[in-house]
Image (cartoon, rainbow, N blue to C red; front, side, top):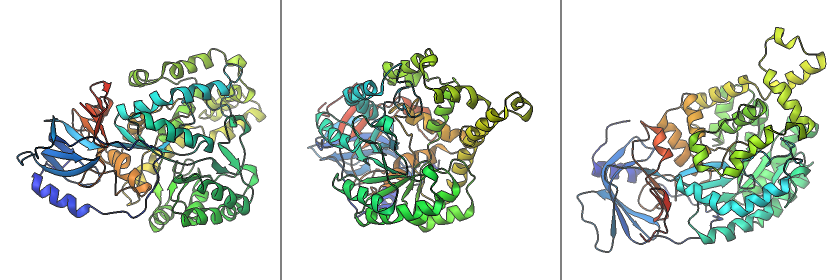
Length: 505
């Protein structure tokens, strides 16, 4: 990091970078209360999208907005109460660009992947989730995450999110409804469809039309060759629907895994690739397409690894995750692995064969031809090669000029809500990404992905007063994010030193 520069020079440079985005999106968080006039004094401010920092500054906050960032020596208006954060470090509120609020993160939340309904049925998972969503959302703000993007769930849950958020200081929620997909997943259809099957362009457009009435922000598409669709058939089916969504200023997020389909989804109008490319190494043509069409690359490294760990019976939660996770969710995996005999055939097959996908030819020889074929098919997804490919692709694209955003895929089995963000950051570190670039992706990169840079993602006058106060410089010590000193949400002190606040203290 460059040396901290003078306050006045930094403020001038910040102003030069300020730009207003004309697109407006609906926030499902209906609690728009804001804090009273408050001055946060003594802050060292970091905006990860800029190569400047501000030392010993005062942040003036009023009506939920940052009114001014000024030198510590400058007088504070009489109407402002004062909060001393001297020698602390301040970053924009963190954003998780990929969560699923309709999934608990537990072992029983995806019966299509882990068939364990004889141990606990899916209805119980959803009942627990809806009953505990308030505390789950509180964990996000407690860990400095002030905005989340829900990348798909039952459209029937949308109104629940709007109603629930009236009751407390929760993250802002920008969401998709049910996913457009070339297949259906009836095992998940308890309170509504999560994957809605479309087979042609007319059906895809009709589903987009139905989602426009939800006033959500994102249209999520599964772009995969399920049902025998070719790349060109998927393009023909989805392109008109994508065009319709973009006519109504919706962000189109596409789940895609391989390079060929990723390229065609970009040409069809995708705004975000929500997992990045999983099964191939990206090339220069891909990067050129990303730049040409201004597409965001949003890999999810840790969620994919968690599935592999589950199937290898190697999933272990960190002390940090245990401290901030729900006990029922943490313990569900021990319950699962203690009762494997009661799981479905597919899960038992995964447990038997996925640990073999990286085996040598000699090791594979002990299996029958049929078993070797199964292992080979599983290896196309669940191998160390895929994990390494994801990391290499991220490393290649991070300095390419493409917008890169950070998401966890929280809610999937083993990927816990809120606490998984630090785990995803660590996975990025292991891929060779700098702390500054990681934080940029988790703040400005996500804001840019959803055209929200006029309100969130940076700390500058006129933006929402969403920020995190830390003990240490996160560019040097990323683990300081594990113990935030304070979370400010729309000017209110939402969390401080281990307790929730209402912003009046």
